[in-house]
Amino acid sequence: MRQVISVVGRPNVGKSTLFNRMLGYRKAITEDTPGVTRDRNYGEFEYRGRVFVLIDTGGFEPSREDGFSPLIGQQIEKSIDESSMVLFLLDGREGILPEDKDIARALRRYGKPVFYIINKIDSQKREFNAFEFYELGIEKYYPISALHGTGVEDLLEDIVRSAAEAGEAPGSGEGLSPALKVAIIGRPNTGKSSITNRILKSDRMIVSEVPGTTRDAIDSRVAFKGREIVLIDTAGLRKKSKVTKKIEEYSVSSAIRSVEKAQVVNLVIDAVEGASHQDGSIAHLIAARGKGVCIIVNKWDLVEGKMKQGEYSAAIMESMPHVSFAPVLFVSAKTGRNIGKIIETDTAIYGQLTRMIKTQDLNRALDEIVQKLHPPYQQGKSLRISYINQPKALPPTFILFSNHPERIPEHYKRYLENSLRQKYGFRGVPIRLVFKKK
Image (cartoon, rainbow, N blue to C red; front, side, top):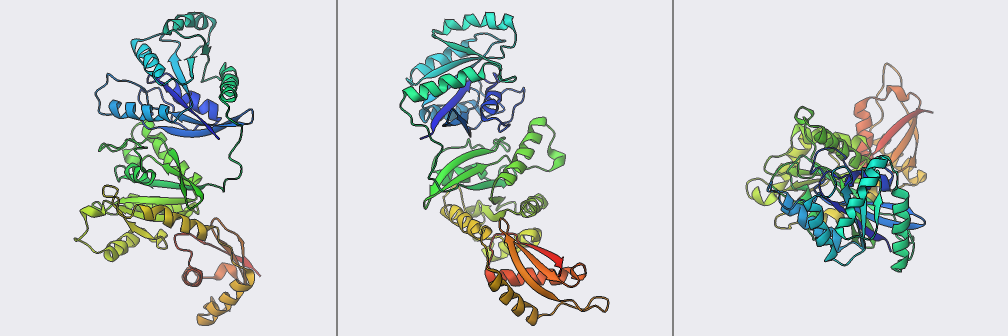
């Protein structure tokens, strides 16, 4: 059983930096701008043989009126509710502020173990001044520097000790089938977070009408027919010309890393706006990385009756021919229509993505394909393809041996790929054809 730990505190006290330090890699955006983390960001780390789930929350700031703070407060409450312990991070440079006292009082209501952590203690003077935090009525605090890592090990030791006292058995999830990692990606404000919430049946992501609400890539877990699914809700990808802030650049790179991390990617398109050139670029990225892909047309309730699904699908494939093999689902996050088909389709795509075909069957199919349409003569040379095998999956990769592999024209390569798809399916999956000298 994994213990769940929430990291809470005012904005800009270093929560994401501590989150990254404990996970051992840069999973969250870290920036000296208050309010960067808005959603709950989940990660896992192991220490002393125990596996913990760490949740990085948005800054607790009840007095702000920018439209996000009440939503962030709700996310923090949900995070603490599902946690077994809380890391309350304070700023050693600024000292105690009234908001810190408010948070301390609020945390006591939950009756859960709270670790009071004084961050940015990187000098003897600051360590001496940290004594003022006893005003919060605490018995112990942890002076650390999340940026440099000092003091974090002592904190981890006490976290493990607290977990042991709570009777939590160590473990790292042995016995579970490998999780399928699914990314939900697309341009801003297409409804990615709303779709994630529908799948999870909870308000896991903050949802608002302001484009760019989600900045980090957020991981959630859901069970589907005995398999663990990791959902990665990403920040919207914008055109480079519109990426003007450093934080937005982080968001784009985070979305690209999410594609790298995932095995199957759901590309969400706004049904009202239709597929754009940017969507085509994203689709090309997904296919180039060898990921399974499903096209999700969201907000279909606003378009239904004005255009047939077949016509809409044809228009999508015309604008993004790189993923002409992808299934298209027409959904509505608002009404819940076809949301249940998303994970079902992703799982089927993953089955195709990991599929291996016997060499004997492949060569029998190759004979039929070549007999139907022989390779064309090239510069007076007769081309022959004599053998095929599949050395790997993820994505399915086929090696074809020819007497003149460098002379095989592109149109015949497309014929071979289409014929293999017609024979074996590979719906939603890019396949690789590698030509080698016999």
